[in-house]
Length: 113
Image 1: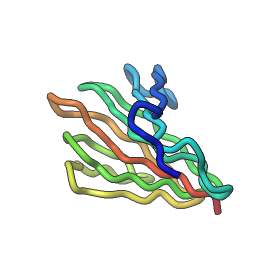
Image 2 (image 1 turned 90 degrees about the vertical axis):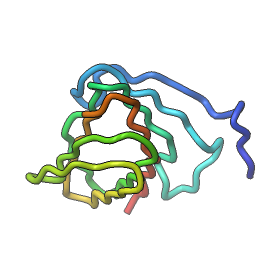
Image 3 (image 1 turned 45 degrees about the vertical axis):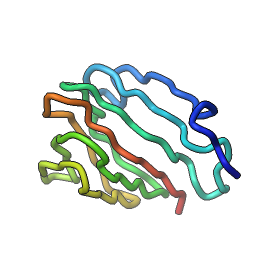
Image 4 (image 1 turned 60 degrees about the vertical axis):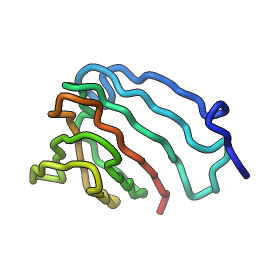
């Protein structure tokens, strides 16, 4: 199934997971398989963040498309930039913050265990 760019729904999530500012979510597919919960492009403006949260019975994958930021991976912190990726498996947590001067753009996929 093809989802054309003009069919991809955009939404704004303010203070996502207790984070700062807002995140723009672009849903990239009209349909997902039963074991997928999310396939989206996340755009964080400078200073925006997604607060720390733990995933249960699912894995979230990030691929950083543009910009730079800082992520928390359980109790460790890492700087990230375009081309980096991150996996948060069940029972583990993460957060992400745009620390740059331009948008931080992330391809995000959540797959249920």
